[in-house]
Length: 104
Figure (spheres, rainbow, N blue to C red):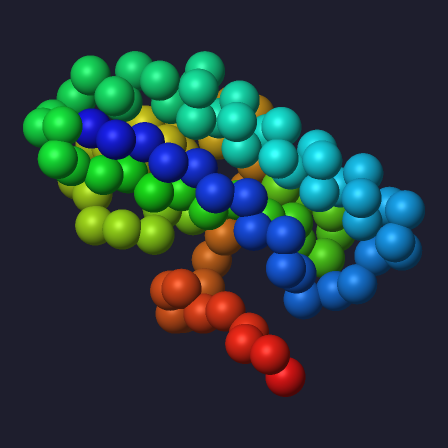
């Protein structure tokens, strides 16, 4: 299984520029750690052609939130939930998937 964790830097709020740089770097590191360390066991599961894609971002209270954005089995989603919960990340609840703001 191919595991990809993407840091989504666009948020619903606008932090101060210097704080935004620090937050983005922290999010980039968190995404790399989640992919390479915490979700590494997922790479041995399933077929090589299967994908697991996880988005992480900040909520307005500066907590890291996560969500799986593709169709995976319940066991895979539970593993991601456990790994992210152990890291203190919160589940990113939304009614729609893959909504990005274009150039407004």
